[in-house]
Image 1: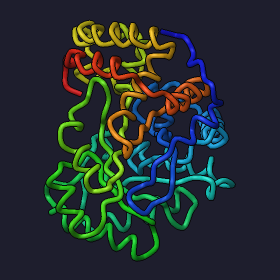
Image 2 (image 1 turned 180 degrees about the vertical axis):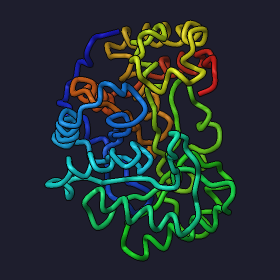
Image 3 (image 1 turned 45 degrees about the vertical axis):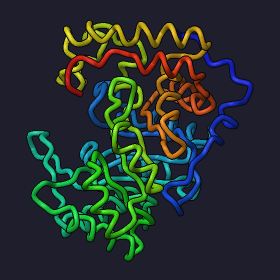
Image 4 (image 1 turned 90 degrees about the horizontal axis):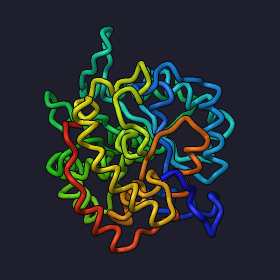
Length: 330
């Protein structure tokens, strides 16, 4: 389970497996870097900005081109971190951020899809990121109190104003995506997708493929569980948001070991690591699917990027299709 991928190509060469962002967007590697965990949610006592900046630079040097953040993460601190890391390398990357979620003083998150908020949020994000535009601005969640048409119309105005080159949605339904797409092209949809959260493959992923919309799969490693390194709740860092997620409660973790036992056997047979298997499975869901693993650790970054060179054989995909459903909500 801990063996390294026997590459016939270097990690840099592996990263040339690409897709276009939307129908007219730039070419990016099919494995991007999610920056959230560097300053929000996971392993809160392990955050180290200097190391995270080095990881972002390493990712660029390795061939990663797509970097994703959001104003919610911190809040605000993750964008500042990413902006610092990209200060002298902005033209080498495709930069994405998100707006539409607000963190209150009690660290609770609320949705705000009002047009005036989205314009102000985007402008504030640009200041923190130290850039005059982002390549992709995403509605972090659809606000049930605001028709998606109103939020999306405001997002389209950001494109017209030159504040972003393209716009996307996160965790949206097919109905919401189609309503937005009728107003202005949806370049991407970002939602959770992994071996233990495959729901999007039923409707959203096929719809995106039909419409030429890039599907960005966040948490392709099941929020770290599919790494095989979490066997009890005590394997999680002491201060970590996953300790409050139902799927990471003791009984659920114990039940879900059946998933990692199977993935471990398959990965060992193929001579790859379990994280590489998990990422390769995500990429196998279609040529317009991008995996967005997050890490703040150099060795895991290289492992994740190398997964972009893995093509899973049909028999492995068939075995993975028979995995048991995960216990506990995500």
